Amino acid sequence: MNVLTRVSGLMTNGPFMLNVDCDMVVNNPKIVQHALCILMDSKNGKDVAFVQCFQQFYDGIKDDPFGNQWVAAFEYIIRGMGGLQGPFYGGTNTFHRRNAIYGLYPDELQFGRKGKLAEKILIQQFGSSKEFVKSATHAMEGSDYSTNGISPSNFIEEANRISDCGYENGTDWGKQMGWLYGSISEDVPTGLNMQKKGWRSECCTPDQTAFTGCAPGGFLTTMIQQKRWSSGLTVVFFSKHSPGPGMWIPLTLFVIYNMHTLQEYLSKGMSLRCWWNNQRMITIRSTSVWFIGFLSAMIKLLGISDTVFEVTQKENPTSGAAAAGDDDADAGRFTFDESPNFVVGTTILLVQLTALVVKILGVQLETHSGNECGIGELMCSVYLVVCYWPFLKGLFARGKYGIPMSTIFKSALLAFIFVRFCRVA
Image (cartoon, rainbow, N blue to C red; front, side, top):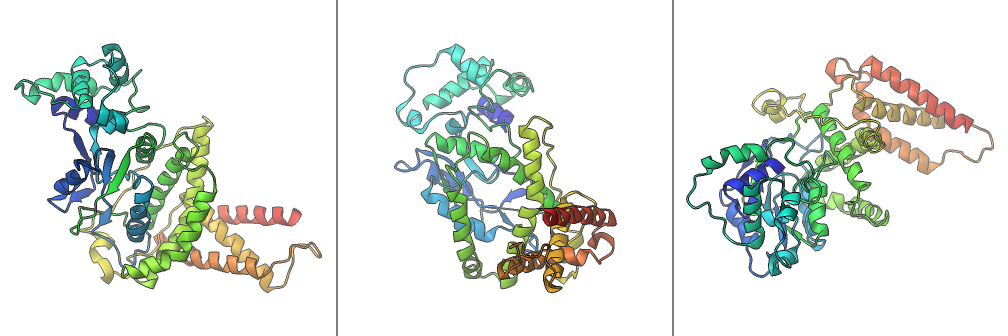
């Protein structure tokens, strides 16, 4: 993205840029006009860094069994962020203001920078290409950048130079300007950094959907994507870009979300089953792959190992389960493999089953210990077993729909150690 920003600045120096993922397509031919109406509004548009359009998908499975559609989240939570400087940058379907990407503050855009920056400082910030520094200067000053009739093809050699991997060394790229480095969820700190400077963002939700794309079509790809997101967001949480001044914010959001989530789904015309599938997947991924992603991020922060970017493989909608749609009895079924992603979930299931067996048989770990299982603990265990019901069925299924024996053995060992530790404690 930083390379494309520099090349576009050299070739055209357009004041606005559109960022779309490779698996998203333009669905509304007038979306550019809609976005520019926001960015160029003479009264309220001057402090808007980016306009975010929602991610919506054309290949969803009925009732969203893997929780990938995010319909209610975009409709209520993201739109509701309008009172908090606007929605976060979602990594795609976004119109950016070039000057905000270049690291300017909103007041610098409206009132101009105090004095001209020396060429030496500009080179330190933007890199050693004088031609690109010239275009960046014109962009920041709000003046037209004219190439005096020179064709963009004449800049090919300079474009190759600013695209080189080593061009950014010693500059502000990835630190104070452009897409920020350090997290595999680079979109979030990039957007937060702009909002920290005082920029706003706005949603753009025309009646005709702006962009559509394909969501992960299976359980395996969903878990890989969620682990990547959790690892990246954990790094952001512990970084200087973290927006939370305390734990009361996520706690309050959690309570509000659980009070209103069902009402939100029903008001959007979705089924009760769709709501439950999403709640179930939230529980599964937050207690399994998000935990693994958290550990991966901790290892990265401690300098032990670096994070590997795992690409989310999305099935071709013209073949397989996605093509069969609602008529395919296997659409939405959970599939498993020997990935460590499923060890944590299977372990949690076995621990809860053990707890239920102990309660049903009336066996206590220690007599008169004061740690007897009450109705609250019983309800929590039952709820988790219900959430992990696909894993329970996977214990007895075969083939790709069954949990591999190696995973079951690892989980059983971990569950035994946990229960044994609880008894000793």
